Image 1 (cartoon, one colour):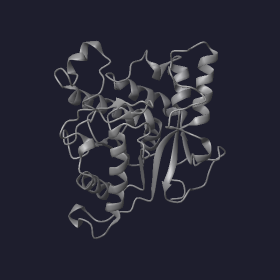
Image 2 (cartoon, rainbow, N blue to C red):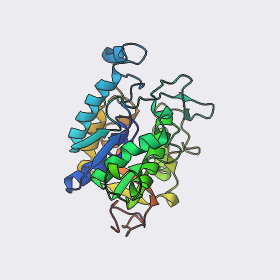
Image 3 (cartoon, rainbow, N blue to C red):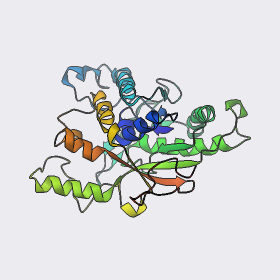
Image 4 (cartoon, rainbow, N blue to C red):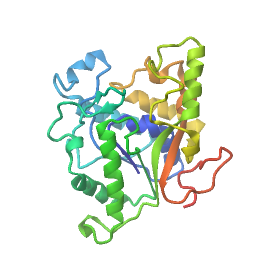
Length: 294
């Protein structure tokens, strides 16, 4: 089970992982907490959908999410509490270059959600699906976005409550998720990639990022626990990313350097294990299966 904040987060962070486990016959469930109503619209002809115009981006992004899941083969994808229950909170950049809550937030924004209420929505799904592994963000939401932070809180609290036999038996039989991972990026690979781009004369891709001062989602390799690489599923991930057309453009930074470079950059997905025992590792020194040891 994966708990993400907006449509496209899942494909960027976990597309290879999801496609691999679907192909291997595992049950893969995606829970998306909002429809990303406040996202920037990168397709000019769809600019009218923006929140400050017709405010129709959410339903459109739901369609993009469905297309992305079809590319990955995921058939069980849900919206926390149902469509429209929690709205994208929006964000702004603070003085440190991190995302933070916007100055004005809708009343039903996910950032304003009652934690117990939102977690109970997830408890019901956890107890129904009974996942062995749950994937979400770290406590900073990887880069500070309030919806990512809230998804982290809801995922962890929901997992805790789902395991409590006496909590809300009306939501199903208690279930304890064996392993919980946080998504991450390898700092060494991020650093090497930036240096390669700079050495090639590219100063615009990932502008403002310094190989010696990486963003918080780049985790030093000593703190990484698992890596999923599945070359046969990289192109499914890239197709899923492209399905999120309002958010990801083929000439944007996600596909800088062409399809072969993109496949190399996005083909490895890293994780930090935060609950459960680490299983056997591969030649990489990391778990190469999120179900390792189970």
